[in-house]
Every structure is written in C-alpha cells, then in structure tokens.
Length: 176
Image 1 (cartoon, rainbow, N blue to C red):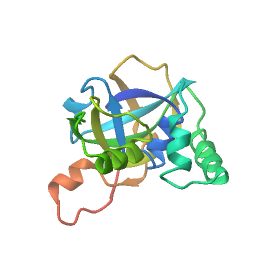
Image 2 (tube, rainbow, N blue to C red):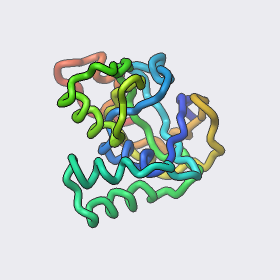
Image 3 (cartoon, rainbow, N blue to C red):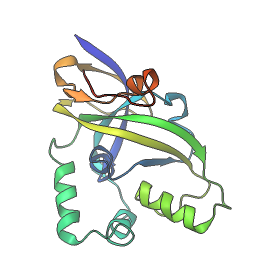
Image 4 (cartoon, helix red, strand yellow):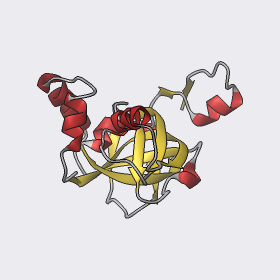
C-alpha cells in the first residue's frame, strides 16, 4: 500500500532545515503552496544546493547558531542524501509579504524563512516536519508533483493536519 502526496523539491540546505524544524516559512514568487493549505506536503531533496548564502547569515546572526551548531544541522539535513523524498511537512496559510511590512515583523519572518528579502514574496507557514523512516529515491519534478510513498516508509507517529482539525483544542499524536 502507498499514499499519494503532493511533493516539492527543495535545494539544500533548505530541505534539511525544513525537516529539522528550523525553517518554518517557505517563500516563493508566486502562491505555489496556497492550494495545499491544511494538507501534507512531501519534501524532496534536490541534487543542487541553494546558490546564495543568506541562510548562513540568518543562522549565525539572528538565530545565534555557532559554527558547530550550523555544521550539525547541515549534516542532519544530509542524512538521506540527495535525489530523494525525505520527509513530510504540513502546509499552512499562504500570504503576500507586503513591501510595507514593519521591520520587526519582517525580521521575524526572515528568521522563520532563513532568508533575507521577503517583501513582495508569497510566504507559507510550514509545521509538523517529520523525516520518513527511509528515503524514497525518485527524480524530482518542477513545481508541485505527485509521489506515491509506500506506507512502510511513513513516520510511525506524528501529528497530522487531520488530527488537528478533528480535535483542535487537544490533538494527539496518531500512528500512521
């Protein structure tokens, strides 16, 4: 048995930062994830790295990570290698970050996105990240694409969006 899930490829280090819960806001020039609000998204780790190094400045600056901590989080993100579906994350609300966003709010968003310069980008909240039990080797796709994840690879226990919707005041972890 397998489970169909929408999937999106992320370059490193962002894929690992999402699955380790460090990156909780995704930014795109268009509202790519808006239609997936309250759904689960599979995270594919692309072969290529992110070409800019804003993430280093955010991790070492506002988030206060030292070089050892940064190296540990980078190594954690590489645990399954590249070219694989490595985990799942729940998709929240998507909104446009206005050019007039107050500086303190913008800094908080940049820390959550691990990226600088979010004005005029579409931002999406990400939550409940979890690594698969094992990676699923598959070629990535452009934009959103569908992937079938074998049930035996799904995390043993996690809090799903469905659990939250059924019991918003005290949801519980459920075996999946």
